[in-house]
Amino acid sequence: MSTTKIIDLSTLKAILKTSKSSRGIVRKASAQAQEQHCNRDHRYNGWENYETWNVALWLGNDEGSESYWNEAAQEAYDQSSAEKSFTREENAALWLRHKLKEEITSSADDMLEAAGQSASMLSDLLGAALSEVNWHAIAEHYIENVDKDETETADAPETE
Image (tube, rainbow, N blue to C red; front, side, top):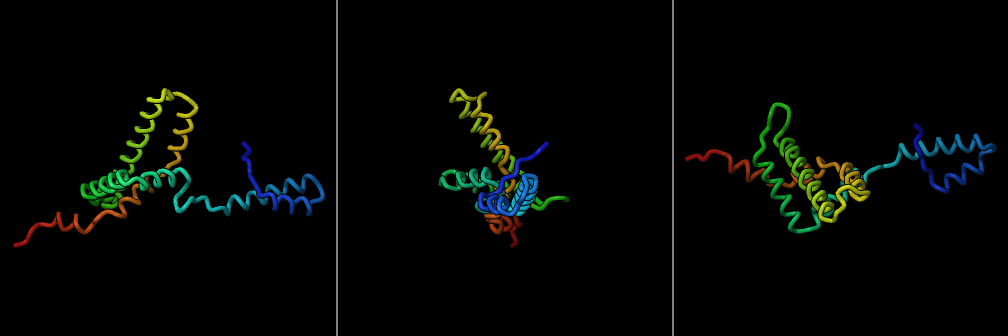
């Protein structure tokens, strides 16, 4: 299966000026497109991709939502513990990742169903976009900001 590679217009103009045959143009354009593709930073505003950035942005832009997910992250951290394979933070992020994905995809499904669009092009597009979200990265972002000191001292036994 062939994949489409894209190069910018100025690069294409330079290739056209220096190539003598159509085969040479195609070869140079393909090589240049591959180089540009491999060197491109696929991140979006510090997040893995646009979909992840967009979800994180919307979760953090609304005070109620931000507060809700901060509390969920704190709860995840408070109820987690280190195990053989994972740290406390990693276990908390795993739990929060599941909660984020479940609640947001469920909300999207409810919204589509209410609009009579549960089986439509819109539902397919929304599902495709949500499948690209790195839920774990968003969860880690929230877990990084939990109050770790308060939890550790609250769980410590009292001394007389």
